[in-house]
Length: 270
Image (cartoon, rainbow, N blue to C red):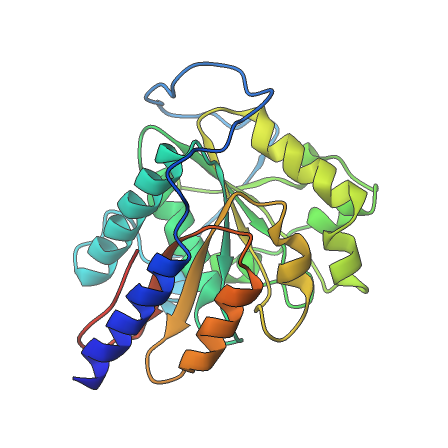
């Protein structure tokens, strides 16, 4: 009963933070409905090899793999896409109240599973500028990263990577921690970066991996630049009051779903 009650509490918190029925306008967005996309040939984006054994050790699940884990992420993908499509949103932040709750792993898995949907491409951006880990999770070491773009030292195209075999997925990683990261995330260059990433392709979903909400002000500093968010929590670890506080702090950002990680029997997704 405690597990069921916890899942119900998570669902209640999410319902209180659901977006209203009026879609936000997308001024300046061109193009028509997304076309079904075929194979993409990457010419400028660097293609990096992906090691299946490494991904397994980091709990990254192939979209085509059998079993409950892949099925769960497919279900999460569908729920997230339905809610984003209903509001014409294309930018999503992955949040968690505290460290160690599986936020980056969730962001990578969700990005891979959305990219497996033939109507979308995905750009996964590592904006945890204190402890970047998206590239390490995927098993490559970037030569340039998003911090170089934000410092005006590189163009976006110079910092993009395509994990080999992950069709329609491109990664904008971070290489190393950045000083004064919350000021960087709320600054003019970051706002310009997000605007450009959002506007470039109509079929693209942009996913941002951010630091924990309660340990730094980074996620809060950035949250107004993203159209919606996904909250990640862990059964028997995330405190109810921490989850409520994180959602309260992000009250201006619609939360499209809550993922309960490591649930032994009952999990709430979306």
